[in-house]
Image (cartoon, rainbow, N blue to C red; front, side, top):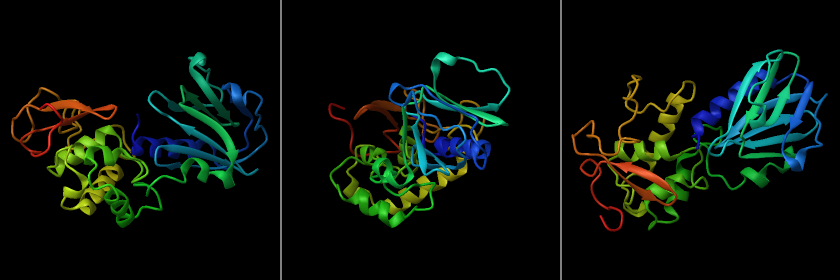
Length: 261
């Protein structure tokens, strides 16, 4: 699932292409919205909220989309032929650009004043104007016995972290993914590091946490199971945690381990 920095970048691209322009085409290819037509409406902005995308219009409507696992948005010149039309779930176009949403996990249309229905439960957004480190810490601390690897993925605590950043953050802070939240010595430092990493990557491709942009050197532990730790040489391990696979170095991240290990 795309992480918060990818969603922020996608929102920026959509905003540049659509904001301030009149829609000349709107094609909702989901059954529930098959008859929706926004032609003639003016897009005012597209913003991200955690992993949610909100495209607002002058008429007081919001197009809410979520990429989920396989979704993506592509922005192309208005006159360019459309490809892979069978995968399109939403198309928005004006005289200059067309924004094409492929395999979007969520597509819905709601009144802008009702946006809280889909984003109201989210915690502080790591890349949003509402970011509040102390509030994020308060929410994380509400379940002290919960493994920190699970807590970081809970968008109700802080919004924007996905599986890549979870693994990389915990490695950089020397924390086992199974360490209870209540045993983490400095949740504020963990939250602040998460913000710095997402800020550093939001305007470029890839989740670079090592400082190296060379192919295969971008991450410390994510996706490197069975390979030597870049720091100590110990083999990186992987194991299931909730419905994801997490990665960690047992030497650099000592302490709690998954059951049976």
